[in-house]
Structure formats: structure tokens, C-alpha cells
Length: 118
Length: 108
Image (cartoon, rainbow over all chains, first blue to last red; front, side, top):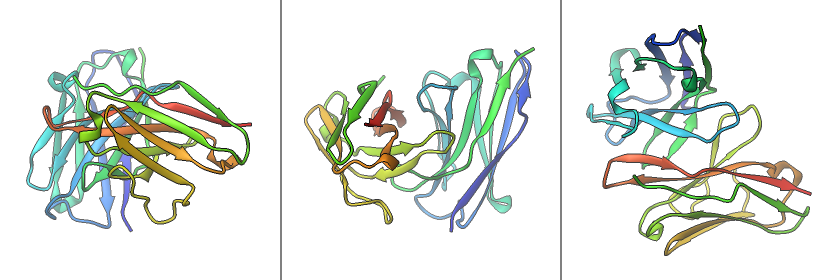
């Protein structure tokens, strides 16, 4: 059974850098074709894909947020880390970690709400 | 950048059929995936690769994808189908994933 869980701060100040960790189980990120990504959802709004890292360390980013995002993997720890710089109140959202094999996302983590406020 | 458009809301009478559209340029040439999100929960995939249902998803969920529109159909809608639904594709030109704007389905 594949599970993913997000962890990180629930509150960050404007201009700070957000660091979120996804800890997963039930698969290896060294398996061909596998990816782990991040998706966010502001309150009451739509889903927005952010980034993904694949088994071969290929990384892809949302074109609109590319300059602010970094995604890394630690295969030995079964973790993927997302950093987002220069946080703004509009970045307030629930951030989800997701498993991908075949260009869709399933399953999803439970999500973690991050609020950006001074 | 590639965009996917969905109706903001769809209403359906209990037991009737709901259709949720997802419009995008030549979307028929892409694989479309559909997610259901109930309030306070993470999304769950209900259709992958245009028309495939994961195990555990009822047969009343089915989908098609042709031309510029993909469609998710819920036949015999039940109260438990009330949720937000999102379409999603992978844009090969950018390597980016794209979600639709989302549709709120209400079962009357």
C-alpha cells in the first residue's frame, strides 16, 4: 500500500522560504517510471501543480513558479523535499504530496495547510 | 501555456446523468485524467488515461475524450457523488501538468 505524508510549518511569514517534506512508503523512488510531486490548492480554489521529481532525478516545474521552486529527493530516506522562496499571502494553500506513474496522480497525501501571514 | 476549461457547476437530479466537460486545444490527442474531491478530503482519481476506472470506482463513472473536449459522465448519480471534479493532462510541449478549473457537482 502506497502512502504519502506531508510535513512542514503551518505558518510562514511573507518573504520567508517554505520547506515541505513528503515522507512516503510502499514504493521506491528508484523504480523506473515513478515520480513524486507537489500540488497545492488555495482555500476554495482549484488545484495547481507545482513540481515533480522522477526516479532518474529528472525534475519538472510549473512554468509560472519555476524561479521560486526547488524539488529534491532522498531515496534512502524515502523523502521528497519542496522549497518555495519568497512566500506571499497568495501562497496560502493546502499543499499535497502525490505519487505518479503514468502522468496521473494516485494516491495523494492528506495535505498540509500552509498559511502565509505576518 | 496549456489551459483546461470546465463549467463552474453542474446540477443533476438523483438517479439521473451528469456530464462534466473539460475543454482544451486538441485535448483528444492527450491522455485525460479525472479526480473527485469531497469537502475536506484529498482528491481521488476516478478515471485515468481517458476512460480507465481504478479498482473500487463504480461503473457509473465513465469518460470520453475527442477533439477539443473530454467528458466525464456520471450515470445514475447518487448523493455521495456530490463533489468537485477536476480534469488533468500532461502537456508534452512543456513537461508540465495542467489541471482544469474544476466543476462542483450538486445532486438534487
